[in-house]
Image (cartoon, rainbow, N blue to C red; front, side, top):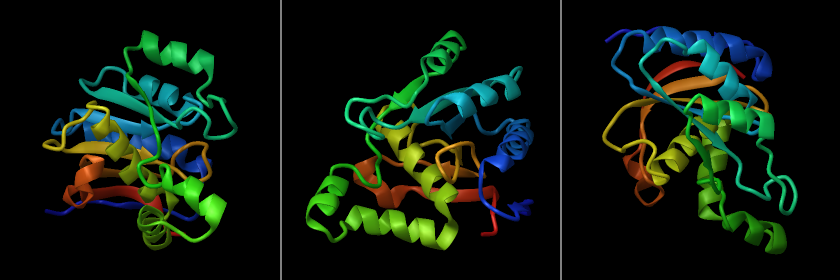
Amino acid sequence: MERKIVYFDSPGKENTDEVIRIVRERLEEGDVEKVVVASASGATAVRAVKAFSGLDVELIAVTYHAGFSSPGSVDLKEENRRTLEEAGVPIVMATHALSGVERSFSRRFGGISTVEVVAETLRALFGQGLKTCVEVSIMACDAGRVSPHEDIIALGGTGGVGVDTACVLRPANMNRFFDLRVREILCMPRR
């Protein structure tokens, strides 16, 4: 099999429109039916809804858990939540699969947990965007929105706004992390 990978000069939100265009092009091949998009405020997911209009795909938005930015706060903007719900897009608001409660121990006592080592390894070797793709696919799988028996496309980014990476992967549940398979990289920053 031969596939094209697009590399961006640098990570960041300025790549969002091109990532979405690349994903739409890949979706038009018709063998992937679900897309998981990391979207803290919901804005990137709203952009994806518009861009994927007319395609027979299910879009799932994955956002931060409540309290991520500050105690009790919700980063998902109400206007974007309404737009996504009206479009029939499920929203997964969940604890980060690659930090979870371990992060509170690291912050309090220092050190690093095994899960944080996995996250940092993915981030260091492949970039924040690919780490995010892996993480949101696990979160969506744990929420029952995608199956560990199907390929999906995941979109992730660097810096919490927009996306700069997309890949086709076979997700896994958190307790079966090593079953996850990145099957194709569609685009990513060269870093």
